[in-house]
Amino acid sequence: MYFCINCVTGKEEEVRNRITKFLSLNIPQEFQVWFPLKENSERRNRVTETKNRPLFPGYLFIWWNGETEMQFPFFDIYRMTGVTRILKYDDGSHNLQGSDAVYARWIHSNNGLIKQSKVLYQEGQRLHILEGPLKGMDGNVVKVDKHHKRIKLRIDFAGRETDISFSVEFVEKSTRRLSIQEQIQSSPDMPSDRPSDSDTPSQDQKD
Image (cartoon, rainbow, N blue to C red; front, side, top):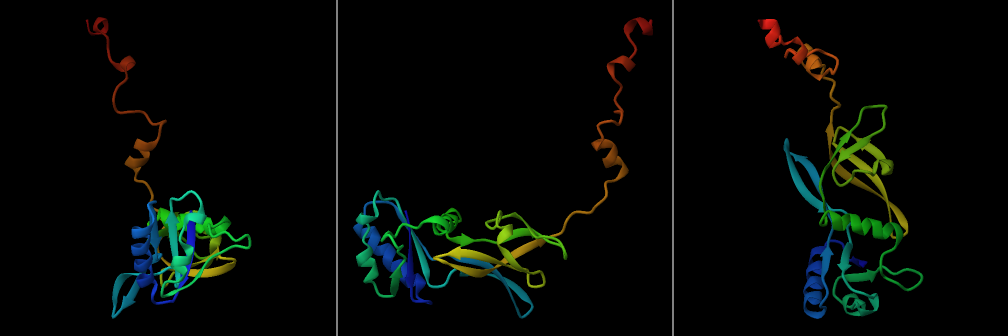
């Protein structure tokens, strides 16, 4: 099960530690608590550095390996300093559903840190995400900033659409022409330099 906790912006790590400590002492099931981060490339004083920045400020995610959410201590967590809300649906349930659950599983699969993806893009053409955590999200791209090496994705979460900027690595499409020798080696119709059995004289022919 996945749950989402709203907390005071800027206090996410403190609240995450507080929740982690409480759950460790009070529940027997496995769990994980994330303050999701994204890997940003930032240039200052002509030096580019990689920094981890909040993916979704003010949000924490919990994965809990329990059987029914009625066993989860929502009330105790809600009373903690820094917690402002626990996401709940109209039916009263807290277990994330639909696109919210997809988003939480995506964070889980990347261990709470969204590293940079590699993308292929040329002016006037559609961007294609080749590899990395953002692969498969081509259709969510709403803005491309090749100069600053960033793309902006629109993500549907908690009943609203949010645009999030990600640092990416732009790669160029290979246009290198093969050499004549490479073309010969790669062509299945080109004869081999090694003689075939039929070209090799038999013992009778030698005699």
